[in-house]
Length: 165
Length: 165
DNA sequence: TATTGTTATACTCTATAACTATA
DNA sequence: TATAGTTATAGAGTATAACAATA
Image (cartoon, rainbow over all chains, first blue to last red; front, top):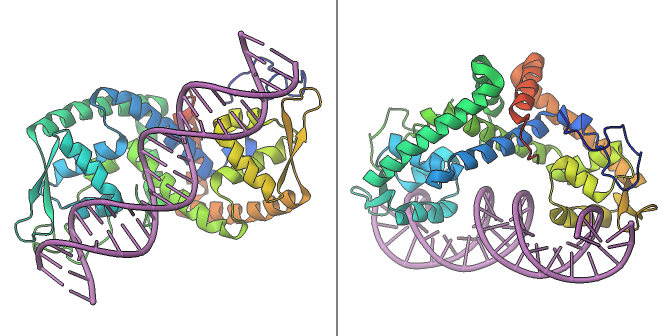
């Protein structure tokens, strides 16, 4: 589990070499394990989608708009658990890049209906390919059955909590 | 899975009510599930340890120092995957609160040996009680066997990656 | 009066470069 | 020259309050 050091011995041998650190109790805590996994998985995701320059939240927003065209900003925020104030710069950038359009709301003139542009659809298609490869890499580590188990356990863990992203 | 809305119908009924958002593909992605779980678990952790005013990283640092007394800052950073520059304000606050002492290094005068103070040990003891209750709450959701499975799957997911906290 | 989108702001976390004092 | 700790800084992510336009 721990990365092997130069001095593989237990500890305290030479004073100037980095000491082996015992993380024993921490690694048995669900919170610590979930956090480490999240950092590792997001790192792999970032590397995997470098080509399309999408961060996890941007990818999630494009996915949600793609599957729910015409959604208002408040709906996306509610679904993904993003503060509406923090959503503005995010959607601004996606619109500036020509991936999303804010169409004026028809029934409610306060709101916008969000849609993917053709460029947004094309980029998301490529992003989904890259994400699938990322997902496959994760599945290699835990097996197909392990992945189903993991998703089930994580969903159960979140159930009843309100926060999302 | 999704929280029930006022208008439980599929969608598009009344234009001013919040629309039901379909997160279907996202929720089947390991990265999204891990992230949502991490946010939910950290939220519960923060609530649980409010009494001792310890955030996850502070708790992890106290645990590591407690189990590896005399560790240098660089060792803690290496073990937990924290940048040494970002560790400074963290350990500063713990020292300012009287939970940790930086003892001058004996063999290497560039470094400090980190130790818990008696107050630090007392607070960590209480923190571990609160953390155990938090852990038990999580275990209620997934069962004892589910917890073991989850830890195993998350460890396998992280194995081979370098990043930590 | 309430809501949509917006601005401003602040606080945390993370990442990098450069400095000092030691080695 | 390399390392331990430090400072400064910049970028994300997240949270709240307040505003204009509209409902």
